[in-house]
Image (tube, rainbow, N blue to C red; front, side, top):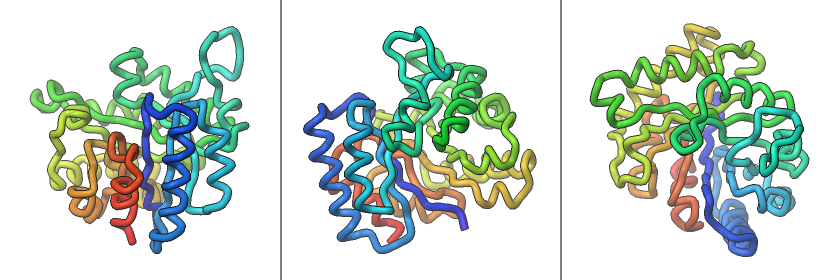
Length: 254
């Protein structure tokens, strides 16, 4: 049975003390209120990782992740952070290929394939993001875009490596816009993603792959979205900055 995950992406928010305060609230709420087998991942800015990982030790349902990692093991890359560094903090996950990284920093599928390799080599589980823009969806190119992102980004992995990857579908047109894909639209893409994985690795691998929805998920729509058969949780942005909202989304799986 594939893992149900709700991952919070704080993006570039929370100073050090604010982050510790928010995470402490989340850990306590998970302890008191989460009764299911779902897992919580909080992906914070780099400055928080070690401290949050120490706090997370008190709750086996909570893990820590970074929001990016460099493709090189080490070197003269001023201002960058390696997968080895991230892993040394106690973090277990790393978001790769988020739409904002693709848009603002020009990250390509080829680059993300290298980042994925380095993350896995350093025992990090990638949350690999894929998704189409509004222009691509309106041009009916979304299935082709998703197929290419998978093929060029992660389908070079062998089955054992791929089993460590979580896929996150981001309808880019529904991030920060207040627009949310309908549950039917989201399910349609998740089914397509799982079929692509099955075609590459076989049905068993596909059935065990966690696929998250990452498009303006909030406490009001999470229940309908997570009720879909192929949506295994969410990659949560803005709502993850409010402990109550975030936990209400997590508790959908109770």
